[in-house]
Image (cartoon, rainbow, N blue to C red; front, side, top):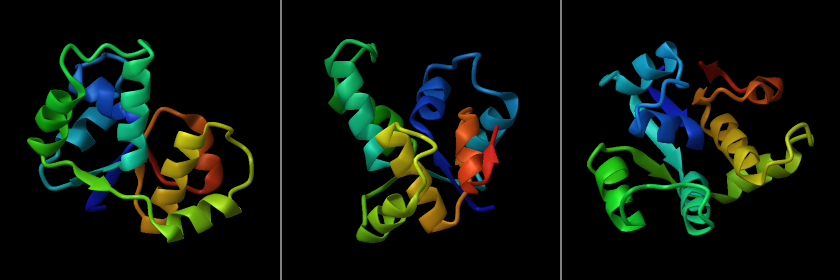
Length: 129
């Protein structure tokens, strides 16, 4: 395992040092040998939740992304047609479209995902938690 995809909540919990993040997840995200990936859908989700007041970042979205994505060298994964094809083939075990995008990206890229969401593994995604 050389790359890991971060679920939105895992990324945020790591940034804000939230105790809900498992020790295994902290260790994986902190490992300098692992390349950290975050989907553009996760960043979109952060913007939406910030705009509607469900997420307090303590700074502007631009500063937050600069400090916690760019400066931490987290690679942003764009949405690709192949990811959408995989998304279309997923059974409707999970209704959250952002999570389904992450599942499709993890499957398409063949990478594990850091998440506490137990449904992800039902899709055959390797989960780090």
